[in-house]
Structures are given as structure tokens and as C-alpha cells.
Image (cartoon, rainbow, N blue to C red; front, side, top):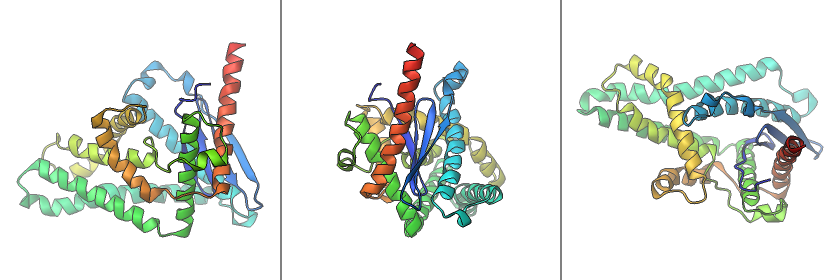
Length: 295
């Protein structure tokens, strides 16, 4: 097994989801203190070659990550709660719809509504799109700061830090122990937080090619171009995660690393144990798959 394989993950409620070559593991600290681990197959090896092409693979990975991420959140919410507090399927669907609606409202509709009132006083389309991008990033920062005050979110951010530390220890070739993972940073260049910020920065450049638009056209074009931005941002994030990224890639990913200081916290040892259990599960699955392929 190559220790440089780029494993990724996601913090969930009282746990961590780690994703391997063809599987994902969700590890959750249950109310009784035990760690529950659930495996999920992700057979990406059978994708058509076109779906593995640069830029296209970013869109596919984003959609797949959203599906796996939502399933992981639902599982963690139920595993970390007492039986009488578990969510029903309808409650989960409603929560997802509300979350998606909030995303559209805050990060697409709101900045464009503000810009619509101001663009007649701004002579340049480029400046209008720059203002929209700055507003979107400002709204995002305010949102992150606001939710970081919530105790439950602070614990999720600590598990986020545990995820990064554990992956960093693995990529350094260390044995996965709490002591080894603890010494690494909570920041990581391939973080989803960095991905979101890269999307927002690149959107300023991409939207500048669209020319002057009405409010409706602006909102619709932003929705349509989300896959394009996702594909571009994924490639930048892949480059940032390489051992020796270029100066430009370092510059582009630096704000995302800085932003992770808001979205991660120092985890305690019990959180690192959960992250290690999750990563060990996908590593073992990958090793078993590799051995089976050789046989």
C-alpha cells in the first residue's frame, strides 16, 4: 500500500468519515462510549474513462461526495443519539432540502440581489463581478464565524481537526496512533473548506466572461456554471495536495488554509481515536482488495 495515496474525509456528528479507493468508512462515538464503524462501497473503478478525465472528474467526485457525505451525516446523527432521539427519513430529507435552499439563498441569490441595486453605479462588468465575489466571500466568512459559536458545531470542527491530523500522519508514513496523529497540524491543503473558497475565487474570473446581465440571468447562470467551477476547483485542490505545488497553486490555496483556522479545532484524544478507526477501516479494505486482485 502506497502511504502517499490521497485519502480524504469529512467530519460528521461525533465522528469522521474517511474515503478510500473503493469504499468509505464512517466511525462514530456512540453514547455508551464505543466506536461504531460502518463501511460503504464506492465502486469508482468501473466509471467510464470520460468520467475520469480532468475537470469532468471534479464534478463527478463532488456529486458522489455530496451523496456519501449526506448518508454519513444521517448515520452519525442516529448513532450518536439515544434511540428515542433518532431522526426519521422524512426529517433527514427535509433537513437536506432546507440546507440546499439556504446555500442558494445566501451564496447565490443574496450577493446578486445586492449587486443588482449597485451595478448601475459601477461602470465596469469586471468590477461588478468582483463586488459580487467579495460579497459572497464576506457572507461565507460571517456564516462560518456565526455557526462556530455553537457548541455542537465546535465539536464537529474538532473532529474536522482530528480527520486532518490522522490523514497527515498516514501521509507522513507514521503508524496510526493517537500520539503520532496529535503532533500534526489541523490544517490540510485538500480540505473541503479550501475547495469552497477556491470555488468563490475562481467564480470571479469565470463570471467576468458573461458580460452584463439582469438579476434573473445572473442567478440562473451562477447555478448553471456551478459544475464548471467545481471541475476547475477540484483540479486546483489536487495540485495543492501534491508534495511540491507551484508558487501559483500555493498562492491560490493559502486563503483556504487560513480559513481552516476557523473550521477546525484541536481535537481531544477520544476524537483522534475515532478518526484513526475510520482511516484504518478504509486502509484495511484497500489492502484486502489489492491482495484479492493479485490472487
